[in-house]
Length: 345
Image 1 (tube, rainbow, N blue to C red):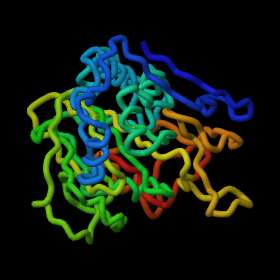
Image 2 (image 1 turned 90 degrees about the vertical axis):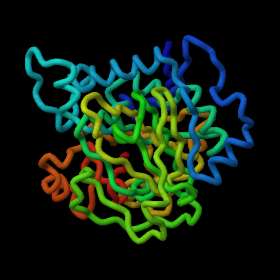
Image 3 (image 1 turned 90 degrees about the horizontal axis):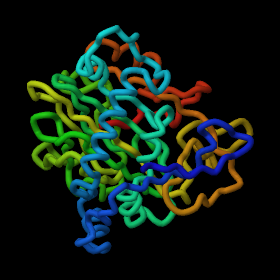
């Protein structure tokens, strides 16, 4: 079963003391992409900006994450900013339909924390990023029937790595189809390494997040990424991607999205501390999932807190006003990383 390796820092305490997470499956199937050479994985990722690892999680693992999703949404794992009070006798469907997305679920769920460093994820990330990999964000999308998608965006707009190694791992907990709002990508759009600007939109198909614009691609250049439950889509932080509403008659398009980067790179995801130069600002609320932390003298911090992401069903304007210039994640100490909206899919 799942196991967490921790390296507690006596000065940081709490979950900030978690320095590494690893996951061991009951069944050792080997890497799902074993038949594919490491070089071909790297080449595919470099050429297209994404790589699909089909059915990397076992059905048992998928079910474990689905059950944990329900437990989180019922409030059984702890407080989440924006959660509504529970109502006695509510069904699982009633509970799951309330929320589009929960940000930072690994902060309150040991299961979500364990899966950050799942063996299949670490195997691919160490090939496309490098031997030392850290995670700074998790997001749990429920996306019930009728819930909106998200407009075109790039993850690096939100999470500013220094070496362009940002990689998303999009773990499908349901079959993701065009009908229920799968991921759409523009293959190769990462190659320019340009972060395109964003603006707010009024498109009812999409949620409250900003929309990228000004890029030299059209919607016709995009393709849907339909995958089976348990599959993982890895994608580059500069890749343009979006999703449409869940137009299925019922059900969900549940997905766990984690973001990773090279541990060598600093992460200026918040303003510098007092007396600190911006050039060395480094967000340290991280989890090491492979290799070693190149900065062992730095303390781990506890900054992010779990939060509900609003949909277009009321709340966008209030949410945007509360985040000043952009849509920013909620942090315990009031700091906002970047001045850029938090990424999502």
